[in-house]
Image (tube, rainbow, N blue to C red):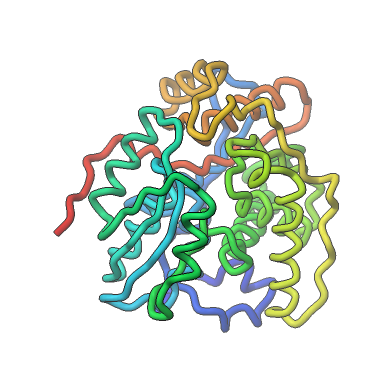
Amino acid sequence: MDTRDPLPLILRFPALAAIPRVPLGEFPTPVQRAGPGFPPNLWIKRDDLTAPILGGNKIRALEFLLAGVAPGSVVLTGGGEGSTHILTTATYARRLGAITRVIRWKHDMNPSAIAVAERARLLCDRITTTRSSVVGVLRAHAARRPSIRWIPLGGTSPLGMLGHVNAALELASQISRGELPVPEYIVLPVGSGGTAAGLALGFSIAGLRTHVVGARVAPLMVAGRSRVLRLAESARAFLERAAGERIARIEGARVEIVHDAYAGAYGRPLPQAAASAEMLARTTGICVDGTYSAKALHVAVARAAASESSTLFWLTYDGRAVNSRPAHRA
């Protein structure tokens, strides 16, 4: 039984308490100023600390997506070779007694992605590599047995995005308690788009006039603004049905995608981001990765420097994936 305090999402929509959820994370995650060397109006939401073993933004979706997974069952998911989603899914499926099978594709690799891929390899029961990132996973999805639990790429589905809607309501509560000012911009990496879409919907529900700024880290077809808005609408419709009440559509103008962070390929580091990443590690001990968070940090620093209002960098990556020793298969 989950004995934690009710999520802000459940407090706002009590009917959602009927949706199964497995307790994986520890919430709320803290907020803090970026610190020495950064603009004084730059804040960080520490979603690297969603769980003591392995955190990151994926925990929030997996609480809903792994609910009801039983010991001995099979979980199937997919992603890039250095996917933190694959690593996080395999880590927590294993803690629930399930085994994880993965379809993944190759892409540009960097040191953090290599470390993530190695940890995931040790935790997965079976890994299949395909040349086609989309076709290979879709074929596996279509052919899966009913007994296999399918976890969508990045945890991005209306059900999984409930975790990120809750994250936005969690931040709204922290703002109301005076832990940080209302940010004009919230900057995060956008890969599969679920986190950005869920946050945008959650801020709309909370009445926060905050702009969600996504640093694109994946190809335009999966990380563009139109896709994020479609995902937000699918989450809104799902939530509206589950909650039994009308929920307003989000304002499209509140979602922005920055394309300059992409660096030309998924997993390819952005050279301009190195200085901010190194300074963050040196002054705070916080590690960001070259695939996702370093790019978003670079965008957040620039946005904060150009604005008198507060900017919040939403840290989605847990550096412990790189800095701790992998857990070998039993």
